[in-house]
Image (cartoon, rainbow, N blue to C red; front, side, top):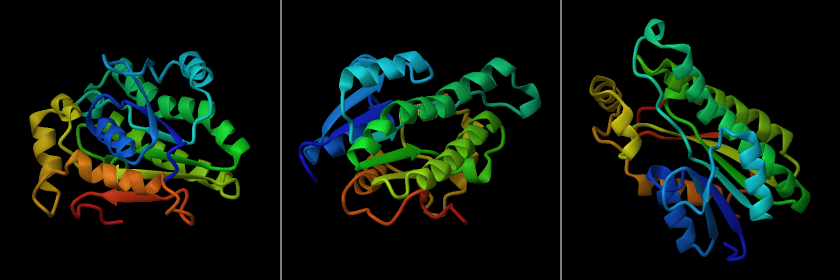
Length: 227
């Protein structure tokens, strides 16, 4: 991979984002982390449209965008979830992905090369019980990816999503023990995934090795995925 490429990774201070940042840095890619946590290169709330566009202006040309920022949201039956919890989940997971694509994709189009990887979830395909905001938001990310992939299909910019099952990340601390046990039990390999395993898939998807895949959803689920 060209060492002159620049990647923006949202939510890159922990979990899958941090693993992807380490993997791409090892490949010689310049990584810029957008996160609200300490240690980020730019403190940006991805749900804040103006802040994301301002960050894009500060960073300059970007070749790779990895949308890893996300929240689990409320753990409860749908009828017990308040609207604020629903809205916050969509604000980060869906509007955040829209905002970053809106800010960074035009430059990729202009330069004729780009790679976007949106981190969705098996929940976006299967629907996890007591996680309706998260499941619905990740289904939206999958549909957004498919639409954008088609829109950019002849531009040199490829847009794909990955759908992990449970991965050993700090975000799982926000998932209720019963919900976590249920979704882990669905994995035929009988274990959760590791962030570095997902980072390998991301590294491939943002490389020159991928040339005929866009608008696709790549499962990394230990065998859970059925379609």
